[in-house]
Length: 349
Image (cartoon, rainbow, N blue to C red; front, side):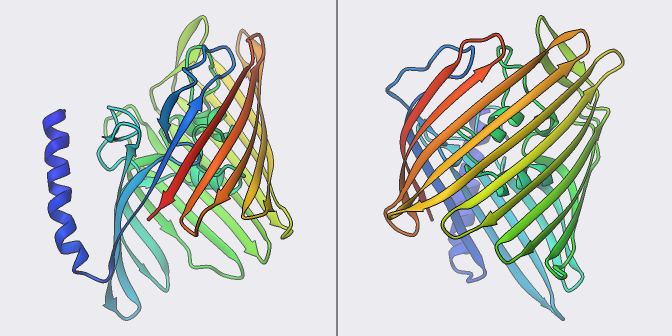
């Protein structure tokens, strides 16, 4: 594994030299690091002096570009890797693929855009777009409730069944028409545990208002779901995600509903997440606030509810650099509550 990562890193270094010579290729990314005291409901706290990556965003490094082919047609690509800024290791964990964030190539024209490869899911994009904390895996209630789980917090929904991106995906996105954009995703199982995946979305934007609806379906997957006192092997997933935002200038409002059903031959699990939040410009920065609640019902198990509230101030040093401080409270039925707080810095390039 170490040799493979070393070879991959060397290949990337060789790629960068010709990329800089081409004006239609961009090197981009984000570095986000924080000092974090982490407490989640029912779990022991981490050391208060812990330095961690991924406060308001998970750090990443990427390459993207396009070539004009004539007649309004062009080819596009994107290759992006997550990395852990506190240690310098690639990926969000040691099991991540090298280009874990995205790895795709496709065509775009007046008819829309089609792409092949590892691509961010429609449900994840909708979750980020209609949450005050965006893609924060540490403080966004929607992210915590839908994508991260453990045996002590068995709240994983279908959003996280196949990660924030799908391997082997084929996608199509329509051109924008009167503020409407549609998209279709499909990914075959290819003899893996991921199952066959289908996704569709419709979004609408006009002025200060935006709304998005996503439906996703996964068949014949193999998901080990933490379902105390045992672990259940779930086979099918059905998900709906409806989000909206409205920018009133003095505050931008966010709201989102995520409904997921997981099933196998003997067990049904239903999870419903509601999140509301806002972003309020104050001084050179903005206050972020978000509240999320997830209710879970499961065959032969008592109902469980989780509630998370996050509050932050994001101070802009420049257009690309900001400092932030965050407080979070997390609670769950039958478990002790937890409080987390962080101070961090984020830079985009």
